[in-house]
Length: 93
Image 1 (cartoon, rainbow, N blue to C red):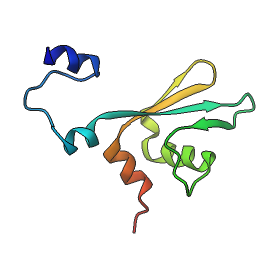
Image 2: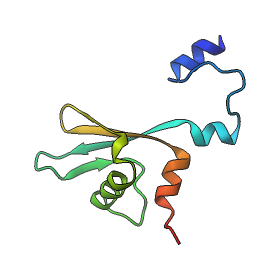
Image 3: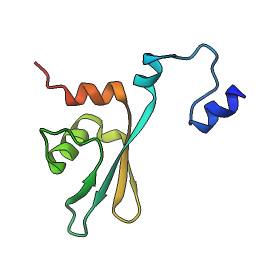
Image 4: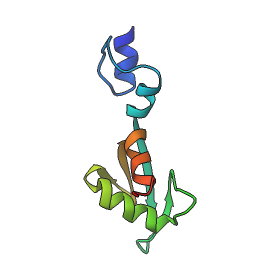
């Protein structure tokens, strides 16, 4: 049963995998992007309050652009983890 639920979540069945907070920070998340017909960002998820949509997209592209997957219809997504996302959002001192 654990193998089925792990495969449903897109992961591998592992009895010794991360649990609790570790599992939450390493769980894959998707940041969805929708473009308008003129090429500007129409919508992007997980937008920090101190950035606009274009700034957020450019920051994501510079940090994890290799994790961007384009889709049809002016859509795409970044596949990352919560831990990696928090390190991008947190300004480097």
